Image 1 (cartoon, helix red, strand yellow):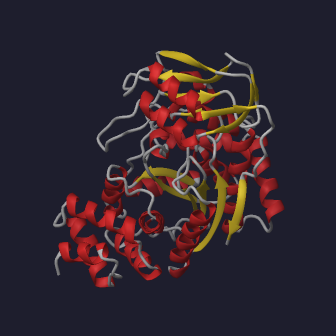
Image 2: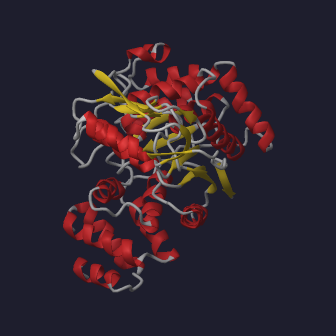
Image 3: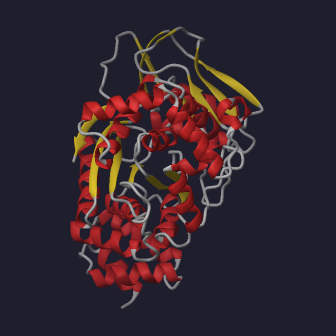
Length: 436
């Protein structure tokens, strides 16, 4: 069996056997299959797709490329959440401590920024001292002590996915349902979880632009999970404008902290609370949706969720003082307002364009080896439906030291991302559909 023959078969649209998929994944993990061949395979899958059985086998092969954690000695139901990626999506930063404060055990293995979307690990590392590279034994200790632990993939957990995740980002093969499904489920199932809640984003700032594609992805993910004996629920959520106001790592940490202090933007609260309620249902600590949502609101309202975040941050080496005073987080050297070109009502905000503007300021990476600037990003001041006067700030840029474009160029990107008109735009729901 040769890698080039497998690539050719997929290029020509043939369904691959389990043995062929295992050969390719195992060879790539060992280093026998080079990046350029795996990149060609990813592009073939991007255009030709994979059937249900192929996708499940891909996830299984990547899962078996490393260690699968056994967390059965830690009391409680282990439930994780995964987002398919959006702009301003800092939900995990608040969601994990909320669920843990309510009695759900949350082992969360997260990723870095991918394309125009941010990454949970990059956000966490904006907290001085916070370690996302914990060894497995320390991961288990933190999880047992605090009820949650947020880390990156270790060398032991789904190493095939760890390599492939970075490769997809720089080969324009991110938006492929089989590759997304295999990536997500291999690392999630490696965590030793009992159940999983999926936040499948839909819209201009998501990898899935259409609801039907997001639904296909959600069903593919749920199918893989259930085939391996896991309970899976998915929410399809809107990503046609940034979630919340902050886009950029330290800025998003501060906004997540505001949510845990029972403040924060309405849309961020709604999505976070809905996903947290689903985690409580799967974790068996709430009997119904209304009861789950009430427990989530209580944990935020009485401060338990914020204290849980402080506990978690300290356990992972971070400085909890920055949570008490987010002004201690990394801050950009200078800011710049983006003035509105006209008066009226905001009709639309292109979330992907906003995400790419944040990247250009230094908040994201164009190449695997790029370093992000934790202070860089932007804060949108106007969202869909808001009135705006000509010259009033649409957003404020937080200009990083590693920006790939000048503040003037980025301001132009942001201005073009906005549509301003005279009529009130229709108000679309944030939670589009529940699958599970």
